[in-house]
Length: 418
Image (cartoon, rainbow, N blue to C red; front, side, top):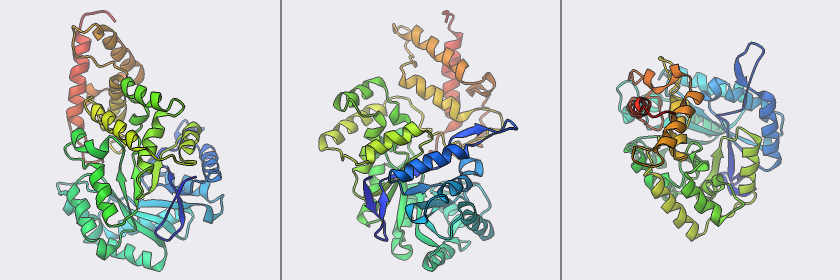
C-alpha cells in the first residue's frame, strides 16, 4: 500500500475507505439493514492489505454507519486503523447542545476514546433562507462549537480537526483565511479529473477542484479526496472515452485512472472510495498497492476526456441520497441514475432524423419501466424544492425533473412502435 504522512508523522494509506454505502441485506422483518457480516469481511480484507483510514458520519447508512463501522473496526488492534467522522448538523438544530450530543455519541457508536480525524461536515451550503456564511456562523461559531472542538483537540480527544467542503467558495476562502487561528489539520474536498478544471462548467455554483487543491497546497494543508469517481460515473464512461483509456492500459479498469489522477497529487493524504463490494475493494487495492503515478501525457489525455465529458447533458448526482425521502415518492437518485446511464450508453437521441433515434427511444423507455416504478418517476415531482437545500451538489432538482419528464413524454407521444 502506498502511504502518505499524517500531520503527526504517521503513515496513512493513500486509499481510504468511505463508509457511506455499506452492503445491505433484508432482516427477518423484511427491513433493509446494513449487513454486518459483509462489513466485517470487507474491513478485515482492507486492513489486511494496508488500508488504515476509514471515513464515516452520523448520518451515513440511515444513521447506522458509525455503529456498524465501530463494530467491524473494534475487532482489530487500535494501532491498525484510524477513524474519521463528522459533525453532521446541517439538517438538525443549530444549538451547542445538539452538536455536542452528536459529538459524544460518535465516540459511543465507534467504541473509541479518541477520534483521529474530525470534520465540520459539508460546509458551504445554505438552509432556512440563510446564505452560506450565515449558516456557517450559526452552525459552528455563534454557538461556540468550534471553540469546544479546539479544546477537545488540545486535550487529545481529537487528533486532527478539519472540514469537508461543498458549495460556496466564499465559505472555503473564509475558513482558509482563518487557518493561522484554527490550524486546520486537513480539509476534505471533491476532486476528480472532470472537476479539476470543469466543475463550474457542470454547475455554475461549483468550484474547480484545481483551485481548492492549490489553495490548500499553498498553506501546506493535507487534502482528503471525496468523489474521485464523480459518484461512480468515471467508472462507466461513454464508450469513446473508455476506448481511449483501455487502449493505453488494456489491463486496467476505468476507475483506476480516476484514482491514479487523485493519488498523483502530492498534497493528497488519502483518496476515499465507498467500496460496497469485495470486487471494488480488490480492484482499488490493485491500483494503490503500489500506486503508479500518472505521466504528463496521461494528465493531458484525461484533461481532453474531461472537456469532452462535460459536453454530455449528465446530471451531477453522486447518489448520496441526502435528498431522500421525497414527500411525493419520487426516486430522485434513481431518476437521475437512469437518465445518466442512458446518456452514457448512447440512448439519448434528440434528432428524430437520426438513424439511431428509434433504437435509442426504445432502449430509453424500456429501461425506464424496468428500473423505476411508474409512481416514482419524474412526472410525480411537483416542484416543492424540499430536496434542493439538502443536495451537496447544488443540483436544481425540480428543473432537472421537468427537463427529464419533458424528454420522456416526447418519446412516449411518438407513435413509432417500440
